[in-house]
Length: 306
Picture 1 (cartoon, rainbow, N blue to C red):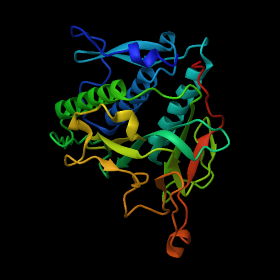
Picture 2 (tube, rainbow, N blue to C red):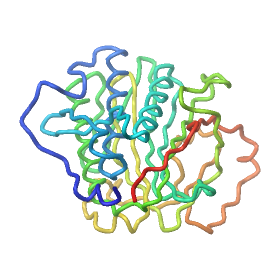
Picture 3 (cartoon, rainbow, N blue to C red):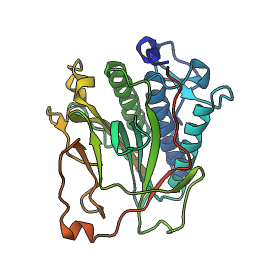
Picture 4 (tube, rainbow, N blue to C red):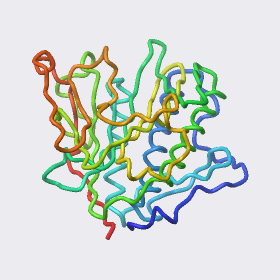
């Protein structure tokens, strides 16, 4: 499985009636469906092109001229069931408008989960009218509102960029472990709330990379009701061959210690992504702030990649 991602690629085909996203987004319900499907499609894209599950764990769906692999329940692959349960837990929190950010994290040492090798951040916002998802690049920006065609264009752009990025990342270690942490909007989320498949988690002060990490801005899509922003953080050596500036913000890629992508006005704790052995001193005013509520999976997942 370790080399599976190298032979996997995006397929181009003629238009099909079996599509991924709703054709029209005219209300909050349609927007929620859109955001859920885009999130699930993104997670599927990541796990497929990183070679985490066998081909049998994916079904095929179409998005314009793209043939996408979407995770499905595969009893022969218990790992895929774990990830699907995480996605369903996120759906529950999205429906209740509690979820602020889902962070898919890959690491190798079960005793040191804070020492990570790759991070995928999905940040959500909700407007008074509903939810929004925005995808932004240095060359193209969509402020979609309720324009279904713009939302579709932004969504296609996001998926294409994810595919390009996944196909240009260096291989993962064989002993990689997956987990997903959910961060919430404390003001509206009940203290005892846990979505299905999750338990109360630890809100770490920082995450560590062995090498120099780099932040890649994938994009943001807005429906007029919900929003989702996507960012990938990995070791710079894995993207050394990625010459395209499609993922660079203002033509300059952000090199770590940027931290998880919380908005400053929403931040209730200070989370940092740093190089290993980099000492971070916390200000007393930061440590006194109330921590953001966090959930983590009941059980982490270790792919069989050897």
